Image (cartoon, rainbow, N blue to C red; front, side):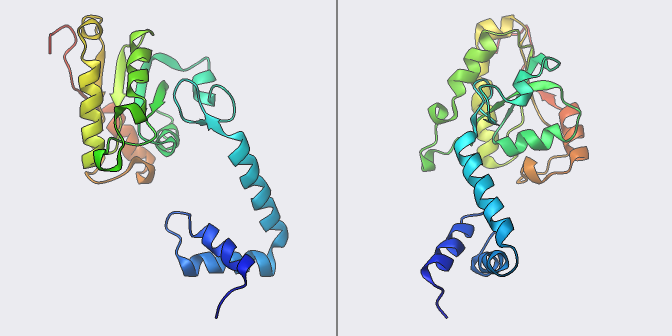
Amino acid sequence: MQHSPLIQQLIDAFRRLPGVGGKTAQRMVLHFLERDRDGGRKLAAALTAAMDGVGQCRLCHTLAEAELCLVCAHPGRDIHTICVVETPADVYAIEQTASYRGLYFVLMGHLSPIDGIGPDQLGIAGLIERVRNNPVNEVILATNPTVEGEATAWYVAEQLKSEDLIQRGLRISRIAHGVPMGGELEYIDGSTLMHSLSGRLLINNPGRSQ
């Protein structure tokens, strides 16, 4: 049975969501049309408002409604530590552990030459300048433990190992135990993430040439 054009258009829109197939999208659409039209209108209004009102933080590039996100604008955060992650979802995951008080830099992806994503697309040069021009003592590389995530962490570490930053005593660390290879931070529980952050490994030895 074919759906009417408006219903099919709505089903196709829901299928854009990750993990949502045709049957699930159809079930969602029929739920709103049959039982919750007021909820559907609220969803549409909230989605429109978010699409128009949410941008990126000027400093860390995570999602934000103002020039600075809530983390970067918070006066109590540790400005000497920056945690580098791939996506805003990773920021939310780490924040839920309530064990990290530093700042972030969100790459909005990872290096993937086959997809045309290189250092320029991730804004890595901006990260280097931010570290160089601010009193940053440590950069924690918390990219996902995937092949692409590891390659991204290695590249960022190499860019940070400039002579002036090393002589300044910059520490470069990588989240360690507790995070399985092939996993993604967004789906890892808070306790595991907390142990990964506390058990991070130094990539460089401050004060020694690389």
